[in-house]
Amino acid sequence: MINAAIVGLGWWGKNLVEAIQGKSERLRFVRGACRNTKPVEGFAKRHDLALSSSLGEVLDDPGVDAVVLATPHSLHAEQIVAAAGAGKPVLCEKPLTLTRADARRAIEACRRSGVLLALAENQRFLPNMREMGRIVASGELGEILHIEGHASNENAGRFFGAWRHAPSESPAGGMTGTGIHVLDAFIHLAGPVRSVYAQLVTRKPPPDPTDMLSAMFRFASGATGLLALVRSTPHYRRVHAFGRGGSAEALGETELVLRRSGQPEQRLRFQAIDSLRAELEAFADAITGKAPYPITGAEMLDTVAAFEALVASVGTDLPVLADGSDRA
Image (cartoon, rainbow, N blue to C red; front, side, top):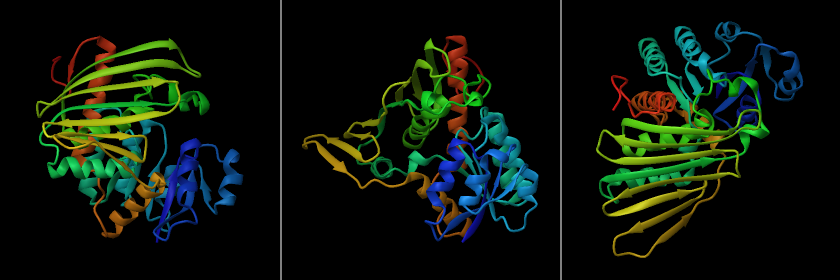
């Protein structure tokens, strides 16, 4: 059993605790940390968490085997470096960081210290996305030529947090909230992004924002891509990969539509899972050596590089190279 600490006990940190506490034989939370502990004392008591007001107290605790970060995005890099220095494996909420330079620094710190760095990208664990990844990797669709994705929901209005809507913490509309999930899928299925051309149209600012983001991608492989997201509208999620021999379209969390040349359309439906519990248990399995964590450091870095280029494109209204060198 991995004894973990949750750092950040806001809306999402509480979701992570509730997904695993008392339900798993692989990981449990024994400590929680946040700047103001008073409002979460009741929650901590219900879930048997010792409370701290600083990351330092958590890292100094020999009873804490690993750290899970559910903190503001701009804090991730420094907190990962600190955890690595303390020899604690760390699972960090998406996005890993806001810049490629910070992502590289965090990844390198963990590599030097010999500790695991895992990304809390729960949608990678959805059953339709797992099957989609297997199909693409197997070559059944042929070379991936194009990929499309959409992610929209009403969370920005329903679960408003001032820090989440600060431009310094959440640039490019809903990218850090929902769009980053689609971008992670793009990188996993189609490889590194070469360039991005994006636009953000804002109808209503936070709280309860209404904005629309769309982006065109070119991948290093030569494939193309389209991403769209809307805040706020009823939940909708789609990732669609197109190859010469067929396509695979993931809809929602449990449906996958396969279209192959010369064959009838096939619709697969999977049993729903708790993807937060799945990612936390995968983290525990990686710590104990049972199985490698399914998101590689290269994928983490490539996703942040593409995100940074997208943000730059929104700011300049020009296509931007994902390697940060020049405009495309």
